[in-house]
Length: 590
Image (cartoon, rainbow, N blue to C red; front, side, top):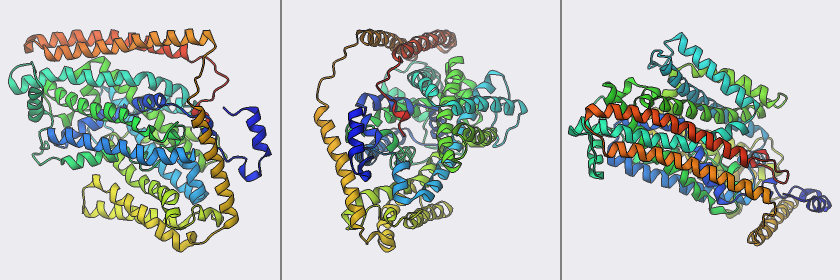
């Protein structure tokens, strides 16, 4: 936190150095913050949809397991080697840095793209939550691209109204609720997969028990990831699975949106903690959702294509499964709508953020009534990568490549341009390439973002060199170098002092921390018991006649355990959320 003395020193500097240290540099976080953040943010409603979609796309078991491993490792490497270093060096969000590089008009175009992507994703997640309420109210399943039930439209609009109201009032409360939900949702994924296994084994081997990994692979190859689509065609390849796993978050790592998160990182290598989200949320979550989908199809005696996420969740976890779908969709929709609202507020600066969010929410609510949006989540995330990744490549080229090529970084700003035409041309060319590949099907849809990214990375320095980057501005460049040196010296001093021991002198806070830890340990123990109970049922499942009774007993037990977990976790959060006037949340730092 900057002190009064530091503020006085800042005012005594020359004007161009007064804001040389971004506010984020004063609020750096240790690795635990990022481990927890990624553990929560990437366990969401999209996992239900994507995991089941892999089954219907006919991927093989070996292809899925290896493809997800490769793709998620590449995603973690992107966060660690691309996103985090530039975020720590600049201590700025992409939106702030992009305006310096490309000008305010380009930033408005980019925010329009952000609005389009996150608005569509928010609509899809509202639809997913509506599926669960639809199931609870025994409304018709929505398998067409358009709604076929007036009651479903009413339910969707009511859920959307709640999402819009919460997002318009602010993100903090919903973020806290999402933090509590995430470990429980991951537990639901694992438990649902375990509960589904005996029915799948019975379908393949005639016995409900699975006593080895080889037995699991046999069941998986026969009933889950068979290598063929329901129409009998060959499924997607291992490399397409890997490309999708990489592309799924590419808009935030290669596209640099997560600069907003990692500008608070204590060190550049903290991007590796994205692996917690990738391998718990994506790897485990997608595999578990696939198991749940295949198990539900067997239990209900119908094709997986005829089921939605609520049918799958209820068949494998009962009412706890429906609650998981509602919570997952609700928390994800709120986060997406909040981001869409922030992007829209830059386009309508004269209106309050809450009013802008409400207006955008009305459009999103209407879109959520169409099941087609939720059915398109998997391609939607790839389209997001295709749309937004080139801007990340342009930013990387400006920051790293231009100086190494003897060109001038921030040349467009020095020219006082409102829009960097080189950036606009390169973004347009990259998108044109992507559209051409999609229309001609010259390469797999899942691969397109990668050559598109490389095109933008290589082309931008060339175009920029012809539009002004070869020139020099000695006065502006000297001032910019002085600003960067101030930040470098600040970071060196901070790192040198970071080893000093921090002594907690307030015994009340120590007592509060201990109480919160005890409550969190209790909440964790509840989730562990929930998983152990489900795994035990899968491993020692009786014959098929008794399996139904045991599953019903587990469903009721899971309700009690879920209630216990939420009580313990919520109290722990309330205990540890006491007022702290000396520290500001990163969410409040622009």
